[in-house]
Length: 250
Image (cartoon, rainbow, N blue to C red; front, side):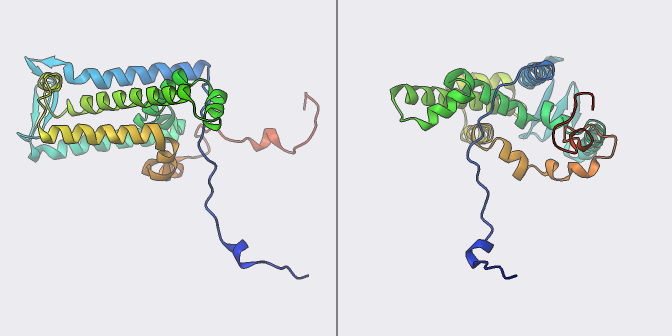
């Protein structure tokens, strides 16, 4: 038997499924994820405002090369202490991964939390999944432009506030926000705020799941930490095979 295979049929073409439209889910675990996401986000914003002995409790002062955490001051030569803390955190993450699978990715990863916040804003402005699909396929009208512009303005505001909150870990929060209100930021502060705001806007608004499947190194090697007892949401061959009609009791 002879097969006529053309040369162009042997070229591997990139898979492109188009944009993914997320459908808002409800349920017990979704409530846990949503509430946990809000808690972690508010904690991230609130930590730089905590005062201890009259000064910011957590501050990585790059200018003076000191790291202050609740009165404890660490210098560059104390980097081994920070390295050990990061190692403990990494092993804790590996243990949780081996035990509960991708629970970090689904519940506590900053990429996931900010992506869900951006999609939450998108759903409130543009509507449900089917409404967003219809909106993108129909001819753009004044209403379409208004929704799109409103969504992106909200995304930009969230991105700038996120970047400013992050910079408050390196610059005293009070002076940082006071200079923001008086438009008195230095050039280096403005650069880094705009840089991190752009990263947040691009990651949570556009890259989304592509960041997890393509760029995130943790998603690449976490499967090697799974074993037969790891909790994984996957296809159960014992329940699904053999395929075809069967009695309910079976």
